Amino acid sequence: MATETPAQDVYAPAPGVVAQANIKSYAEVAQQAEHDLAGFWAERAEEFVWYKKWDKVLDDSNPPFYKWFVGGKTNVVANCLDIHQTTWRRNKLALIWEGEDGDLRTFSYHALNREVCRFANVLRSMGVQKGDRVTIYMGRVPELPIAMLACAKVGAVHSVVYGGFSVDALASRIEDSESHVAITCDGGYMNGKIVELKKIMDEALKRCATVEQVIVVKRSGQPVTMESGRDYWYHDLMNLPVARANNGGYKCSTEEMDAEDPLYLLYTSGTTGKPKAILHTHGGYMVGIATTLKWVFDIKEDDRWWCAADPGWVTGHSYIVYGPLLLGATSFMYEGAPTYPYPNRWWSMIEKYGINILYAAPTAIRGLMRFGEAWPNRHDLSSLRLLGSVGEPINPEAWRWYYRVIGKERAPIMDTWWQTETGMFMITPLPVTPLKPGSATKPFPGVEADVLSEEGKPVAEGEEGYLVLKKPWPAMLRTIYKDPERYVQQYWRKFPGAYFTGDSARKDRDGYFWIIGRVDDVIKVSGYRLGTAEIESALVSHPAVAEAAAIGLPHEVRGNAIHAYVLLRTGHEPSEQLNDELRQHVAHEIGPIARPEKINFVNGLPKTRSGKIMRRVLRARALGLPEGDLTTLED
Image (cartoon, rainbow, N blue to C red):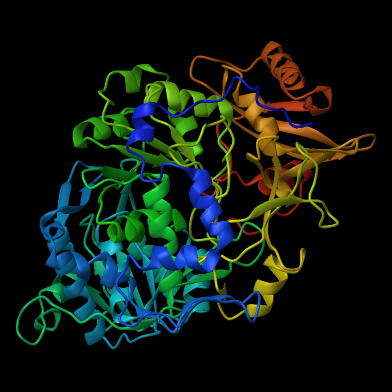
């Protein structure tokens, strides 16, 4: 029942984009990777600093516990910061930061390295050692990446918890990681309000016995409780003699790490049961994220790159903090909400700082679409040469708006599919790839993906099935922390020998992948499987609709009936006429079987803080059932 994109709805890359692309031919590099996977990734790894070169590129002797660059010694920070201190990049801007209140801070590679060394010395003075876990719960401020890098520098394992999670969510993650040190802020700005981060941390620590020391960054200046002997101000610690090396300078040795030593834990949102800690390592992760960022977003020395995610999500780990620094790029980071104080905040910053590449979530794009074209059109966006999409399938209507209004039909959209677990882009265009709105196109070179039936057989062209990955990749998760059996059960048992992504997808005649959504986001109506993302995309393609969510509710005849929740654009009001029009619109776009039983007009949708709609909450509310864990809800 999936709609096929018309043949003419293919966007060829502009000649200028192709001319300067880092990779000129997808087919050539994909063929190289297919012929010699280990050799392909070894060649990429040669670009980095290794204290000791690896003995073996890939150890696949104990699947699914794959190991990469076995015997190699490195540290991601040696490649993010140390290497740049002896080159001209020492004085290049590494980070430009703007606060929601207009504050501006910039860091050269020299200045960022100095701050990381100071804080790494502070952590060592507090007893933080190689392998220790450190929980970071902060707003979107420069001290967050500084803390992450300082942890990695001393060999500690950071566990970043998004700075909007509730007391329960934070406490459960601290307990599971058994952190002895936590880092937070007094407060953070979002939508003109202060998020009381220190207060939430204090409440969480009432049930966490492991944390002995808390470091607090002063951002909002609001009064907070500081517990004597436990809580320390970041700025006070950074000015102590312990922040300096023995010779008095702001230096700190970088811990030599095995390629397979843990770099970080990142807990998934927990929308489907107990949150699980995904474990990533230094060596393979470093090689995977740097290669994908360089090839997919074509990073150049004079680019200003903006990944508009939060460092608390995997997108931020891979493509705000580590990836850009590995490439010696200049990153922009913004603290607050896209529409504060007005819906042109993003567009004004792109103009102000000359941003060349914008990487954002479809949720944010759709949210900004609601305010129309006048807001972006009042700004000069000509610096943009590439756009990106991350987090969920982008519906064709939002894709076209993004391409036309923001990219001015010059900037191709790199629609990337990947996960917390994969660490790096897995299915994605390169700048030279012809694009189809709504498709993530083809697997990144070295990645082998397929769409399988329930029986594990490849499905026919255009048919929906289970998305799997058939080969290991360097940035892959190594396990679920403290639960290897759950790792095997969740990702590798359904289709032996293949990693099960949990997503459904289809492939078209050109081998392009269309991600439909999570398998549990599929509605079976009269025997037909309909993806919620597909129904929602059809609804959002109507000019009155800004956002939509679809769920299946029991129906005595059809098995399930589709119920849709719709958020209207400014200037449109709910009515019976519009209700009927939207139901008919979906039937026209997909087929009569997809016509919603009921349309509910709402003012908001339940979402995780990463922007994913929590359909299970809508379903539970509609059926009068318990709503389960709500700690990941945005509101």
